[in-house]
Image 1: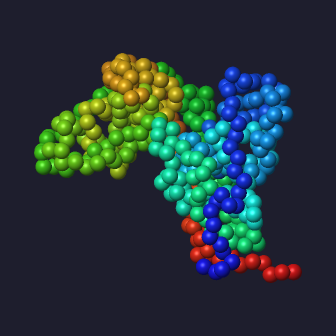
Image 2: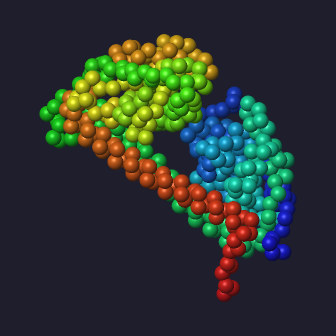
Image 3: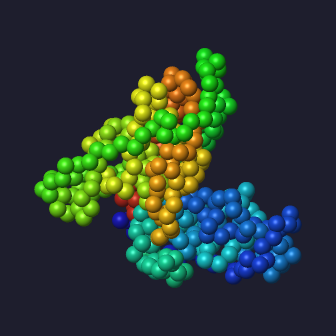
Length: 411
């Protein structure tokens, strides 16, 4: 490390302000109001005003010290994590005016350090790991202003700060643009599903065929594939995420390690429902890589009554709609425990109704179109993940001085 980089602490180079204590009794819907920047509004890299709370402008005179400015860095001090990253953002011109409230830190650079350089420092892997190590592990994890100030940092000369921040800003813009594209594709897919799966939009060649309501049990049946038990066999156990999040592998266990000795085998194209989390949309199609996996009797496996009549991909897309999730909820007749609704009843679910094109070819064409969109979204998401990984590696090298930036030649 060259001598022009200095070891210091974050608190020596920033102005840190936490917001004012507020009462929800003073929230207002008046047009003459100002938005409150709460921790709930801070995402990873941007501010989300979807659920904005507002404060009367008549109270503003005594709170002007808490008005945020464009370029301010804000960090949530409670519930510090979202989507595997810190809730940290820069206030933009479109975010202003807004008021800083308690448990949110406003950070501005000082003593030769820019706010932008500080923001990138706070986004770094080192700071993330530091927060993990010092945050108070309570029901609501949080960090203190002192803990933020005590973070050790390296300070390059101001001209290098500008160049480093500029490089990382370029990556940020690329990440945000790609993130926006992914979000737009997902919204488009959701809108198209709403139209295609309800019959509001039809392919011209199928408009002469019917689009009718059927009981789920008219097209699907419960299927059992009990495992012949062997205490010494290694069973690979599968499960399924909420909100149609797809299957995932749990641990692989020997038969003698499994308490409940009732397992069933999965096949490609099965429709799987978790009894415990059915009310939260834990259902979906079994892909090829999970064929042969095992699930307990706390899962329901559904298969076609007639494979020539139903394309199971169509059922999978139906299950991603709010209507079918609500039907799964109605088929639960148990109680709540640890936020889980128990006792999903497959027989009740089979009595629910779904909307189906009578033509198998139309079902398949709808599924093909949606499959193409899903593939595009996955490709974009992989590119986004790669860009984030590149930025993370670049930050580590630039902010520690492992890679030195070349300054432009003086004019």
